[in-house]
Amino acid sequence: MKTFTLITGSSSGIGQNIAIKLSSYKNIILHGRDRSKLEKVKMMCSNDNEILIWENDLKKIEEIENSLSNFIRDNNILINTFIHSAGYMKMLPFKMSSFSLIQETLNVNLISAMLISKIITNKKINNLDLSCIIFISSNISNFGAKALSIYGASKSALDGFMRGLAIELSSRKIRVNSILPGGIKTPMTENIYNDSELISRIELQYPLGLGESNDISNLVEFLISDNSRWITGQQFVIDGGRTINISG
Image (cartoon, rainbow, N blue to C red; front, side):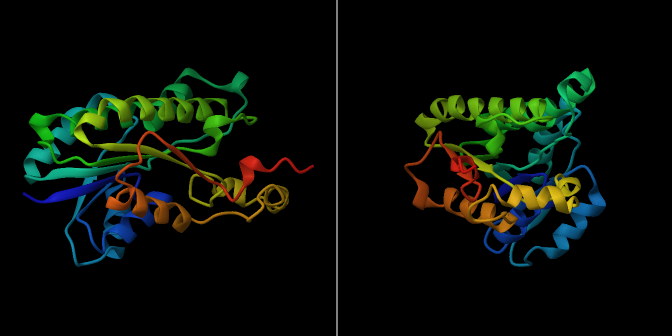
């Protein structure tokens, strides 16, 4: 039975970059809600390994467990690595937020990660093959920012879940970690990067400048390898020094 790496949010941005990079030596499950975009990413992946597509909208959390369980069974596969790169962010002052925005943000950023983790750690569904889980969080997780209260709360909760899950799964030697990126241009953040004045101000806060998706996928490669065999329950901040910069 073949083993696969599941990457949520792999139709664009960081998830897409991770999928393309890992496809050269791993079987990949591309995940997203737009099959046409996933098919395009599949064409960009290596032909050396098998690429499957799991089409699913993570906002619809009531469908996740059955959808993924059936996907695993129907394809007769096992998942040995899970990378949760899917994310939802809408910048809005909290006083203007709606219940639906809060629910959608939590569904995509947190609850879907929990439900997927529940399925792939179920021995009856995924046997005993799982070895590594990585959550793509945000450096906002440990700080505050205007118009990002809901997004920040979802990422803080994701990191809290990561720590608890790391302990629960340690007896099975399953490693669970989070990566907390700083400013990286993706489709989710492109509205910010289109404001040249804002970007100029932001760049001053990053000692090493703004990052690229490749900076994140490089760490993913390390964390899924045997070189990280003694690392679990950790937050890895990759933000070019942004969160340690107290310069005026």
